[in-house]
Length: 538
Image 1 (cartoon, helix red, strand yellow):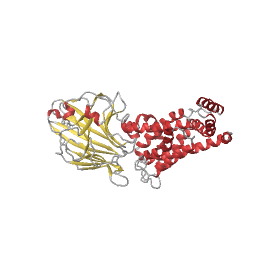
Image 2 (cartoon, one colour; image 1 turned 30 degrees about the vertical axis):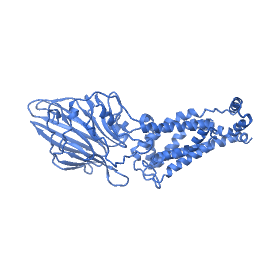
Image 3 (cartoon, rainbow, N blue to C red; image 1 turned 180 degrees about the vertical axis):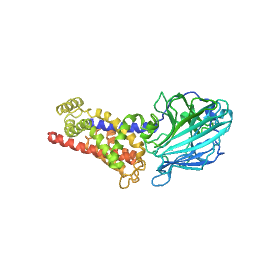
Image 4 (cartoon, rainbow, N blue to C red; image 1 turned 45 degrees about the vertical axis):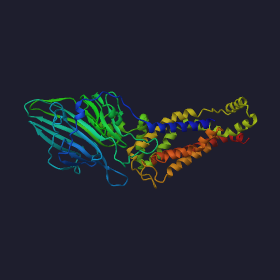
């Protein structure tokens, strides 16, 4: 009975987890509606300027001189699809879909001040293409604009090997009067994806990937803010620290304002609810006549590389969606990365970390599986009691407990280890499902991408087969017809679940199951040596 209960508990936990993931919606507090600025800002972003191209070793950007916004961003180290040779398109501006990073200067005298109805500035550039040269670690791209005696130079500063871009305004006031400006940065995205778009990581039960906004402030390290949240009520958060971002599977775009000033985080949706925007507005900066001032922020455009995200801003690495078990998933990822630095193959690293984790948990699982093994070996004696006492349930219960006491078996002894182990297994589930390092990472044979499902479904079938073997090694299921049917179909049900799972994740469960089979075999052998096997024969 104990083993049956354990397997049913595991099944219930897994199924409940998948159902919860499929229906999970993250809700942040709904603050008041933001002021008129956020409703008007950016509405007039028509392409009246020209575009320039900016390239580093990892990024290719298209910047519109009208407003100086990033209208396109390609990640040169990541393919759009496996072996396509086409860089991954993160930002884009097309008739069907818009995802852009805007920034400017507003406030009383800001050239981007939409409240006063002025057009956005059209910047001038000396070149139409800027490229980070070999041996060069930094690329500075200047965009200049002059009006009413004030000179504005907007710099995009790209760094070799880094997806964090410095966006800097150098303001020289020669107007004869003080000016009052505030920097803003915002991310605008079409809510509905174009028809036919295939999203990475979606489709598998329990693997619904969040696509939407998020922010970090002085009051919360990390909070998602879905498109539905933005459509319902606008974000209105005043904070000195933090960032705002747009998330999708494996990739993130984020504005990180200056952390030594008060910033306003806001969001808005267009009147027809087709586009969502999240952004920040910095505090007012007054520049006296004859003086200059520099205002800056950081813009992250890239993959969810945890160490770089952490260096760019506090808690930005939490955008890697490890769920509520992030505090376990993060160290497990760093362990996986450490192993990979030696073996050079993410698939073999998964195999090794599986053995490490299962080895660490061995003291817990040993007690669990010894209990299950003893239950299996005692099953013939329990069946004999059923034949002897028939419908006398009270006598049957007394004699059964006597056998358990004699053999020092706790019928529910295997349950507690399961509940202790589940957070570890779920944190591995999150980690292996969301680590961008596994995207397009080959393993061996037909597995060319550990983040994608097995194209031939061999891994899911192997997982189901190993689960079936574990079930056959466990004590005989209960006589109850419903439980008996559940136990019979459980490997099949889980095989169906795993058909769409990333092959790296399925690989972990195959190796974990093989470890379990070997562990149970050893435990049965130890118990038989101690004489339980002889009792079983009687």
